[in-house]
Amino acid sequence: MGIALRGFRCKLTNEYILPNANNLSSLKKPPLDYESIRKEDWKNFVDKILSEDFQEKSKAAKQKRAKNVYNNHLGSIRYAGLLHKRKLDLGVTECEIDRNEA
Image (cartoon, rainbow, N blue to C red):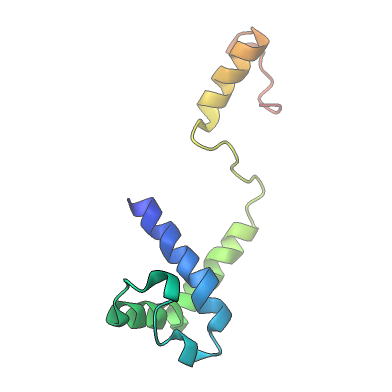
């Protein structure tokens, strides 16, 4: 549930709030796709996203993310699952797998 909520907030931020950050009049009401969001909650959310504190944290997180050399693309199997899969595919023991190629 938490991941879905985070994704939803990210979608609202990137698709509705940040593109219209200079046009605050368009941010007074929730998007038409999400009319079920109460105006009071929408106003609080917009205020939070456009706050200086949030913008600083967002910028710092983007800078940290940009420094990440090895992008995680393993998904839910993780590294141990990848080694196990490679072991089964190649028919070798774990010691024989070159970890640089995994």
